[in-house]
Image (cartoon, rainbow, N blue to C red; front, side):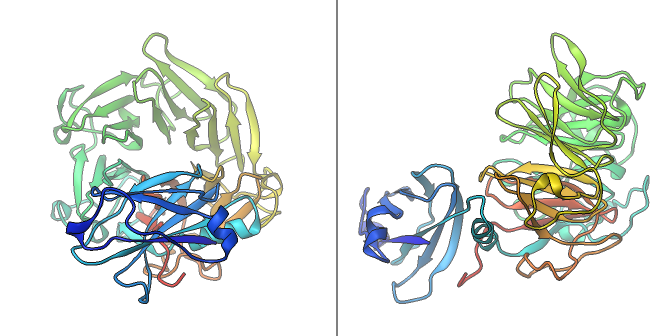
Length: 443
């Protein structure tokens, strides 16, 4: 690890550029390690020579001889970078630490140690019966971690930090605000169909929404499965139908568990039983790829390829924009391989969630296996969270990485928010968990 330090000084005396710069560690680090380059009045701190792929950590202290506290982590995919740091009204020092998170066992250890506490963001595990809504009006506006969820299937954040949950059995999309309160964002909590809109999203019915996709600005797209529609909820809370699919499950949205929409709305993908379906405004619905056993979620890479979880086949595929499938993880069974083994030798018991990590790797979440895996860029598997079926729910408030303790149950989806926190949607009992992308003090 390498590090560099800068002093804020009195707030009213801050210059628009570098105040002070001290490079700690060996002389070799001063030449090749990370360096803070500038800090301006707006709090923009810039650096160079970060380790790639890696994680940069900003730490603060009121005095150089006092304890340093982690303030912010940033994935480094380039040697240079910047971030906004908060100023205080008194003296403050900032230190930049950089670790590599390459596709090695040490790189995985470094990655683990840049994360911290496991916590429940939403849900109390009140019930698990399918087809039953556990939502009550008293939850509206209250703490999200004191509200019952109803088989949540997908959770994803916008850039501002709001979290949106496709809560299937309450026939709604729920929003967890940055203050931790929960709100109905779309749907009436009564399943059905009462129009296409545009209309206030909380006045239009949804019917078993099974997935969603969130644009960075907070525009939400909903896979309204039983209404055979993809809905759009604008940032001002108005919902309308983006496109309609026939109600016949063989050609509509039946069995859909994932949705992706391009920002300009010229392309969308969703799961449909054993197929990935493609929609464009000009051509309508087409089949991109078929022959899956029981689709989970997928992610569309910048190249246009999809990384697809097939729970029933125990495989994770990469599917090209032309529909060609290649297995990238799983051996087609529920056993074999494991921690430290190649991905193609490792049995994944019902992979259902996939999400990329800026390191070049992927998070893989299993439903039946109740585990969260990290597949690094060399396609080596590393276990991050262990679990078991039923209402397994442990570890809140503790460092997340303890494989000896069963902490999660059946996985639904895994995503990362814009701050780098890992979000796990799990369990028939209804929980959304978060692993904070923040080092523990002293780590």
